[in-house]
Amino acid sequence: MRRSTKRRMLQVLSPYGNWSHPRGMQVVDRKSAENMRKAFGGAISKLCGKRLPIYIGHPDDKMSAKNKLPKPVGFILQILPTEGGIAVETEYPETTYSEIISGKYEGLSARWEMSQIDEDTYTPIRLISAGLTNTPNIPGSGKILSADTHGGKACNLTESLARAKQSSQSCRSVLLSARRCLAKARENSASIKEAGIRARMQMRASKCGAHSKETITPAELSQMALERSRALAEPYSRSFAILRREYNCN
Image (cartoon, rainbow, N blue to C red; front, side):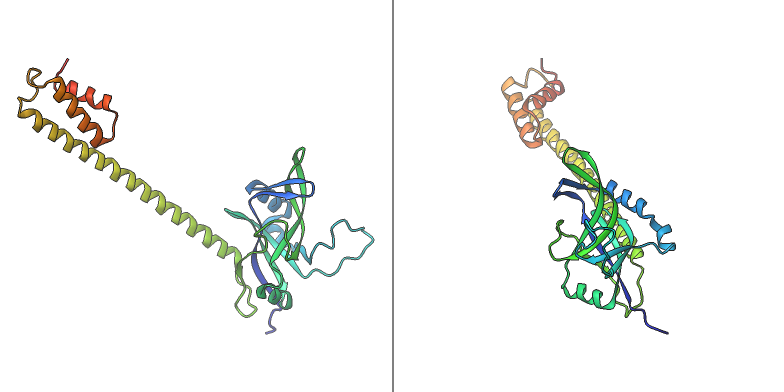
C-alpha cells in the first residue's frame, strides 16, 4: 500500500481576545469562531472535500484576480471552536509538515472577512485563507495542539480535541465538588466552634447562677460578648444581642 504524503495537525488559528489590526481592533471570541465554522460548512464541507488554502505569508491579500497565486503549501480541513480559541485541522505535504515541526514556521496568520461592530472595532465572520509566518499579528497563532506522528497514518484530531474537552469538563466537575465539600466543612466547623463557645459561656455563667439576671452583671455580659465576637469573628453588637436574649437581660 502506498504511504500517504499528507500529514495532519491541529493548530491554534487564534486565541480569543482583542487584537490590534491596521483597521482598528479585532474581537475574536466564541461567537466569531462559531460564525466562521458555519460559513466554512463544518462536517458537510469535509465530506464534499471543501478546504481553505494555506500559503507562505499572504500572497492572496489585495491581489488582482488576473494574477496567478502560488500553489498552497497546505490546507485547512476544519474550523473548531474550543474553550480558549479557534483551532483548525490542517493538512500538509511531508516537506512543509517537517518544516513546521522543526520550527521553521512558528505562526499561522489568518486572513478573514470581518464585520464592523463600531467605529474601529471588527469581528471575523469568514475565514479566507491562512499564511505560515514567523511574525503573526496575533500571538499564539500556529501553536501545535496535536500532530500526526504515526508514520503517515492520519490520526483523528477531532477525537483528540473531544477527549481533551471531556477531560477539561471532568476536571471542572471535580473542582466544583471539592469546593462544595470545602464550603460544607467550613459550615460544619463554624457550627462546632459556635457550639463550643456557647458551652463555655454557659459554664461561665453557671458559676454565678446561670440565666439569672441578678447574677449576670452588665460588665460580665459585655466581656462574654467580646470573647464570643473574637472567637466567631462576628460583630460585637450581634454577640451582645444574642447573649442578652439568652440570659434574659433587659
